[in-house]
Image (cartoon, rainbow, N blue to C red; front, side, top):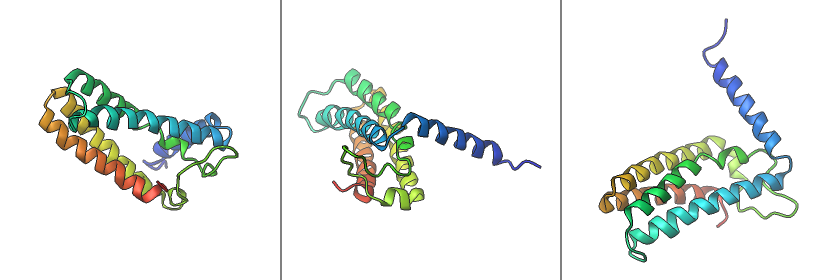
Length: 153
């Protein structure tokens, strides 16, 4: 008799195998996840955050576009945190070993960030600056919680 978890387990194994094939060397994984984080940083902090903090004028369309990019990209870096990708020959990583020794906590914090990003996108799509400010702060705090726990910066 098949367990109800079998399809999920098989899907997870296939996804892990595909991710492993995509990142043949630890450096590939490190560069990929750093690239994703850099683009998210630009759109979250330098675009939306600059609007929130009054450094650039609020532009509802630009905020919506940037929040949408952050939401899309928020699911991308996690498959690149494969075992053995905590360092590369020529690529420095700020990832702490706790990512691999505390995977449940890492997943929980990444899930919380992704949930906040959905709210950020909804607020940006609505064009409501006050709601966007609240969602931005919650998203920023969720990002910070993960970075405080799992990176050296």
